[in-house]
Image 1 (cartoon, rainbow, N blue to C red):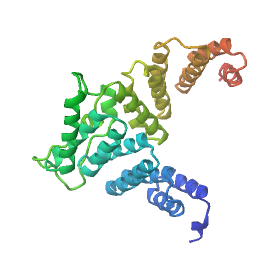
Image 2: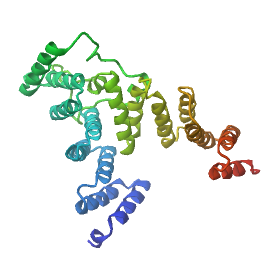
Image 3: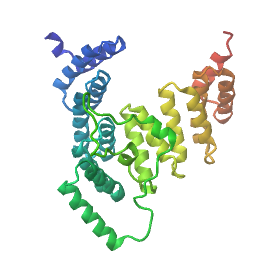
Image 4: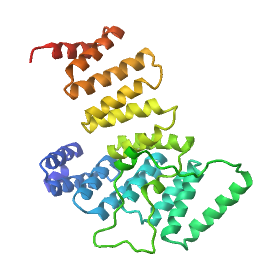
Length: 317
């Protein structure tokens, strides 16, 4: 039991080494030791959930994710809590309590259409849910009083890349889907797509990326990129996510696309070109990288890292 007295950072390093060796059960034990010392360590709890999921323990993974989401709620980090609840519903789209939590979060953010959709999802699974029925009645009453004709609540399917990035909903092992229960699809869980909702998708993307849930982040940024005001930021974030996944050709595509979206000031141009240069270099396209780095030097002659990269790329192999 000596290792229980080791610093949390050391236990984390041990767990990471076990993961690299593919020894997931040992890594799980190390993460659990950290949580014994620090139950509110969200980073570790998320990684523990991911490990449970990889090892086929979906219920245990969901339990860890639920604890994370509740902690985010307690800290008023609504977008992060929303992100985790949506991840849970991708894993098991029959969890009525999670739809209720998601609807409440949408109501806090004044996303009435998205909240209404979650209540409808609840009724598909549990038609006599009294809370959902009452909430929908109140929402419809308010709409009748104040709403003018609009497209609020119109469900627009996310772009193909966003939909393909999401894991398909699955049922627990050994269970079959009943014909009389309609399971909401990922796009129904996702919600409405208007300007307010697109902003929410962008913030969800940021939350997913910070939690290292890159595939989910990509899906959110793809959806949010429909907002002209945020398209540049979304393309840059998509490029950064692609870099983390080592999909450098996609990163190049996104960074080049971002440069065409708006007129950039000098600092924005330097940052974007630097990311593009790194993507070219990582993809083995050294001549393209050199061209970009030389463009950066014309804008900022004192950019030391770029000068070092140019010198390194010019050296004979």
